[in-house]
Length: 611
Image 1 (tube, helix red, strand yellow):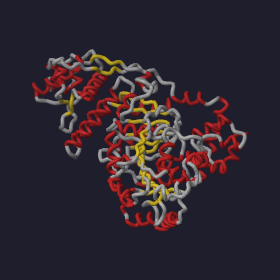
Image 2: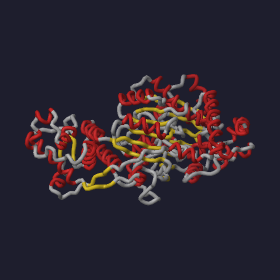
Image 3: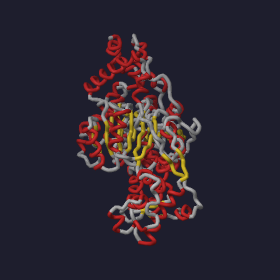
Image 4: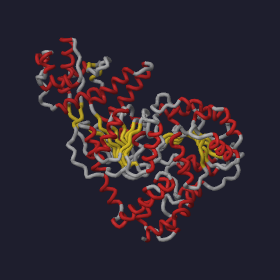
């Protein structure tokens, strides 16, 4: 359907925003994007998680004649997405492999008869001829391609079925298309345009800055204890996500947190599908649950009150890290992205790249992604500035954001040339004199002059570098090794054991031609916690009402079998607690209270406020 053939709009975008979604104004580029799509234009939208991408296709679907077709890879979440829209009075449904024939038939009939505003489909369904025939039998308002970065073969969320989505333009050339993603480098951005045949689409790129997220990266030292301390002191009782690299680590971490009184659940591809689904449902529906997961979890999770995302292992790329941390604080309230990162992470990731299947170009790309991630971890400059720079954006606030660890407790950049030379000399001597290679632990023992059994048996106490590093602690030496690996001055052998070797860049350091700058970690004071900040933002008299509203919301959500945020988000409850509305008109003026929810909950909310 073209704009010329569209019937008169059923309502203006702003009217739909106010009446259905309960907001009185658009954010950022939303209005411009929506007007463009309503008029029949194609669009590529790059907007951060929590930036309001879904409204960019939901509102045009409600304004244009016909049904908005949403292509989403998130089968496990389609029910929650449809429930959230139904709570707003939007007629939405989905078609996927979880339904039986009778359920599918009901949805198909509703679509044919024009009774749906939005229909969600998994991309693989478009390869089925019966689905394309069905779409021809109804009226299509638009196609929305959500999580469009899945089309990128270089990305960590690549889905082969997305490559077939060019069929949309071929079969329905006059239907507007909008492709959306929360993160994309320039390379991925170009791939989306090319592979989805969106060469003439208008591009909308929003700022990737999530000002409410505090980015923190710290050196690993008993990571489970570090994680427990972080949660207890800053996010006790909050919902959060903890990412681990392996399934075994997920299980171990979830068990550890549970043993220490944190309600934690595991999620990874090796779990029984029913248990995975049950854990995901509990995380979405209950307050204060921590999900411990591999990166198989999280895409499309529309839970606005995730207060922290923690990583216990080094992400493989900045793009993946940004996307995962973006699952915190979708409601705009203060949240934390916390990462514990150590020497073994670097060694392990280097080894995985060397052993990965694929072309040399593919391994080079993986190496470049890791280098960028390591640079973010080791920077002495503002993390937010560097993170945004990776996506080609200049931070509007200058060179300091004031809400990351390097701004709050600036590290010192020191001359690390001599420590680097000592360490590289040890690696060189072990190879040249003994044809031996060792990992970081043994080399540090030599530098510290430790007469361990292994050192003395191998007669490494006879090396000229034995004991010359006693001026640094073991932890400091591990930091030196980690940073030299990050800078490419030190390498990992392709032997499967993580042994250290010199690189082409080592010679210039050993000769003194290349100075080495290292990051010295500052002494970090114990943090008072983000909780205090949230409490201060609520007037004292509003605190009790806010908690009463949360309890009321939990009861309503359980009764309806939906996540708590489907009833109301924290931001809306906070608005009610602060303003204490005395009439339906006052309640309707609060952000997030639309017509359907005002009708459904208005009277009991006013009674709760009065009580």
